[in-house]
Image (cartoon, rainbow, N blue to C red; front, side):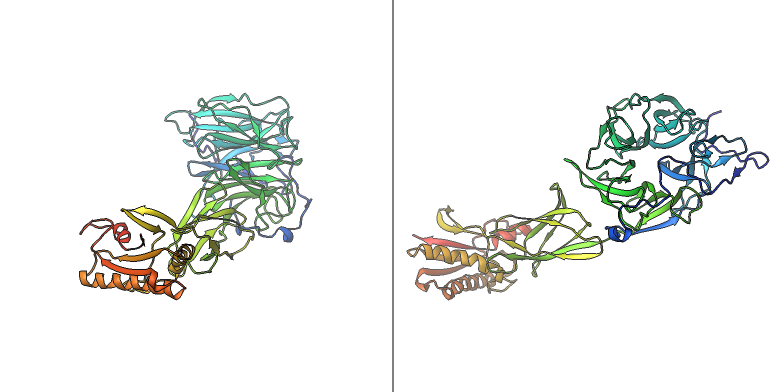
Length: 534
């Protein structure tokens, strides 16, 4: 008879979930005492705001989460089933088995059912993980001779079965007297993370990763290195749902006590320095097995006081801390506000996160994540591309202020349409107005500089409009705009004898699009040209 996905026979007459001692622990190398290196107040929330609730499944024995299968949480527990359960002398609890639990909408869990009578044996079963299609399982099992040493296995879900795991295989990366624990499959199914006490480990247990090959076998394990692993133990790796962050438990980093949860951003160059996930989830006791069910919701196991047993499972909801970076885009020299500037927020590897075009007040505003590194780049005609570095250095709801000062580019003297011109960015006017906007003072100042450097040079300033509105109105508007630019130059020291102005309205479009003009065409036709009189 094939095993069911959650195989559990409940016969009141002869099988009972018995209650055992409340002070026992089912897993090796965990701490019940406060061996803290750092006080919880000094680490504080550290950029997280977790709300933890009893998951509603805990007993006097240890319960530790182990990931998800078909929308169910898989749990490792030493719940003693019936009076014939064998006691593990290393833990004084029954040998561990795998259970599955339905997840309600609020995250609470149903009563546990045995996961698989094929995978559950007379030895101790521990953590497991699944391929993305959930047809391959990687799981750990100890021997009866040494219940503290786990080996890594693989099995395949039989096609069209209800949980019949076949082709069980002891994987080749196992070594004698080496324990492989806490496997976790990456969301893409290309990497398997796990913890192990291999001889080359930096500490007791380190976190390793292997590539998953086409046949489901694993490549030679790679130690994640000293940025993640320490001389103490690191265990229980998992990944964010977008695979950008590694989560793990450690005794060796900046801890509140026991095993604390840490996160590290995964960069193309390696792993970023881990960050303690803060005192809203970590305690002076042990926090392990953090698995996400959604972006900010998941489960964690802890042996903190006031629980029901050794390790208990808690739902963990992170109320995301929202931070912003905002400021104005300004000309470096004059501090004039610069609307119509493209501002782009990038992560520390240069990947674009968001972009904005500044409006009349020249402000920008982006959401950022605590303790992340960013760059902000700017693009605007007439200005050099800006590149500004920024680190979100606070762990609480806050706003950072950073004005972006831009350097202007130099104007170019060049032949355009058989005319010698001073070529620079466009001059801006308010809609249907002829007064030069403040941001264009910077551009006109470039013209003044060229004219002062070339006292023999004379200019004619030609203004053009788009084809919206009446011809006569556009012609008059363009004449006023050209004259307004001349007036600015005269008021700033240029002789009126060197300047002329002409308005062409819509008679000389740069793009002759008639009634099919796009917004970009209209913008291109609205222009001011500085022609050098030879």
